[in-house]
Length: 346
Image (cartoon, rainbow, N blue to C red; front, side, top):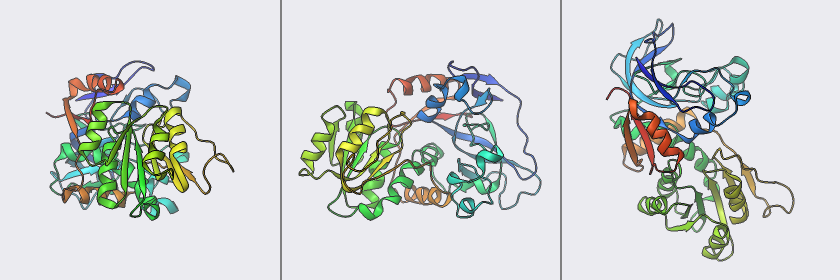
């Protein structure tokens, strides 16, 4: 079968031919319908060799949906032909966090060498993929696979971040979304459907600010050195009760801290390498700074439910498997408006 792999440190991903997989006991094989392209992949591929925690080559794709093609021995509750989404942050399944459905915070994954598909285990950017356990599959329930696949990360991750800040997202409050790309434009929609706050979107690109307005941002601000001052101006000097940074670079993290109100949440989601100093006097009183990771299995089901009732819709661009390297190139240069989706089987 064909697959998109990261094969050499520092090189672009390649389309290669690899052996067809077969499901082992307890595993499920999917015929992949769609796979998402994500900045997380680029972040991993930008690391030096000593910072890559898994062997190469690696089949990419941590966002995946497909149809069940074969079941390993002992698998029940699924049938060949079922259309499913892959829950990506795999855990051990037995620790206290996994028992809560929070496999994204598994306490033993690193110890046991458990890695997500596309971020250590073979991912969805191939004609077929192996899912380690049926609990990591969620029924699509009639959703369009192309529209649904980004929700497994680009929907789940902002949903998880927003949900933890709901006590502060009350009517009259302001939420700032930094980065109106793949995750940010979904976050704006989620904020609009889950809360009654005013949403201010920041980005460096005018086309992404236009997308932010199209999906529901009340205000858009160019993300430059004056952005935090503009947010304070728009909020009467108070600042934002919740700031969600989907870039995470040093300049955007600094803007996030400068735009925060007293008793606010600053959530750094992006992998841009920025850090925000925390200490008395460095931020407004009682500011909470957090760096969440992905989301729980139950939250993925909730995100898909929101999509079924039309409350969230991902702006997508589609590519063939052979065009996947181009999709990564376009994403790296900021030319993808929304989310890029690969169609491994046409």
